[in-house]
Structure formats: C-alpha cells, structure tokens
Image (tube, rainbow over all chains, first blue to last red):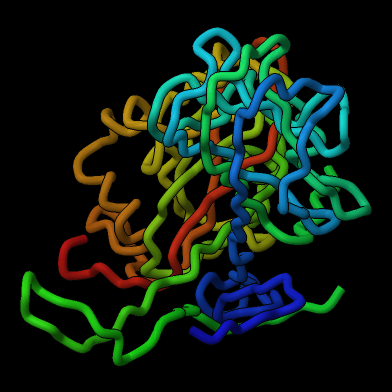
Length: 158
Length: 183
C-alpha cells in the first residue's frame, strides 16, 4: 500500500483563522491530527537503567504527548513488570511508566505519568525514546507493544 | 516547521479494498477518519473556564464531530471537582452567550486524582442530565441546545476553593462524522 507522508503538523478544520466572533462562521476551529508511533518492547534478561534499550520511536520537537499505553502479549515479570519510558539512555526521571504485569492493554495514567513537563511539551529538540524494566527484573520473557500518541509541534507554552 | 492544513474532515483509505463477509468475497471502501485533538492550558480561574469575566474562546470543535476522548494533565492539584461543557452563540467580546457547563462531564474528581494524567471515564459521564451524553456522539446537535449544527466552544467550570488547579485539557474527536440520525 502506498504511503502519504507530510512534514506536518497536519491540521484540519473549516476555519483556519479567526476574523470575528461567530462560531461556525469566522472563529478558527482547526485541530491537530493525533499521531501515533509504536515499538516492540521485549524483556530479555534484566533491562535496567544501565542497559536500557532504544526504541524506534522519535517524537518531534515541541510535541505534546497525550497517551502512552502497552499492549502486553506475554506478561512481564510479576514483581517488577513496569516498563519505564525514557528520553535518554539511561535517564531519570523517566517520562512515564506502563504496567506489563498482565496480558492486555494497559494505560499510563495518574502518577504513572512521570515527567509532566515532557508530556506537555517534549522540548525544543526531537526526543528518542528508550525503555527499561523494573529495578531488578529477573528476566521472564515479557513481550509487548509500546504505543505513544502525540500532537506534533503543538508547542504549549503555558 | 512546515504545516499541512486541510478544511477536513481528513479520511484515509481506498475505495476498492477486498474483504469478505464470511466466505463471500467483496470489494468496498475502507476509509477511516483522522483523529483530531485540541489542547489548552487551564486553571481553576483561567480564560476558558466558565463563568469568569475574562472568558474567551479557546478550543472550538467543528460541528457534527464525535468526541472520542477527553483528558486532563494535572500539573497542580485542583481544589474542587471540575465540569466540562460546551458553549455556543455570540456575546460581547466574542464570549459565547449560551452554555451548558456539564454536558460532557460532571464532577471530574481532579481534587483527589493527584498529579498526572486523568482520563474522563464512565464515572464522570453516567450522571449527565437527560440525553446530554449524545453530545459525545454529535457535539452540536443535542436537542436540548439551540444553534444546532454549529461549532462548539469547550468550557470548564470548577467552584472556587482550595488550591487553584493547573493543567492541560485535551479533547480528541473525529471531525464532522455527522451521526445526526442517532444523535
């Protein structure tokens, strides 16, 4: 299947610029297309902060992360099965964590969102995501797919 | 950075995709809608909160859209629960003169959620008045509202008191799906 590629960000809405104050006629209503990147996460032996693994996910500069999830297809270590997503290798604090303890889809919500500032705006440079698993994972062979959704170059300044 | 802009809605797919109904081979469209998002910084007394004397239009969702997800990135804890609603019409200074402050979510417990990401869920939408839940299916055509089929401005409302919360409100939607027949 062919692929259509844009430098982005991709925006859509019938009114691009506000020229008045009548909704539906002259008030801008454009939104950003939500983007998603996915990467495989594998637990092969202990994946600690010292040997964290790069993913193929690179988030463009000034983007807002709005969702991080893990589709676990083989459960990770039952004691330490949290996948910590970093923007460096290693880094601290991590951007967020997702539980991989049980098979299925898990979300990074609440306090699992680590670096609130990075979720709001990843910063002025692209960030390359890596991951590590628990502090002393014993290396059961967990497998999952990391899902990161974001708005490209939303550039939230507040 | 460059930018690609469309009036939308943006759909992706092909007209002649092969599929099957059980064992019957068919050819048909497999178009899907691009999922859109708008975000804005909010505070308990910020610009897009209702009611304030400085309320302005911040997030405007095109008419006949399906709202698929609402979340709040809480960076400073809220002092009270928050409602999310919609506004329409035109008043002085560009402030919509009609609104329903809780037609999308009611009493979101941001005061107890702690810092981090809060995703609006069934517990925040199971107590909406009447058929207001229909606004998620069709943001502009709730029969209890006027100005049917017109863009909607997103509003938030939090009673004063406690710490003044700070966060990022994100509304995700599919533009102009137009589910008028059912909502």
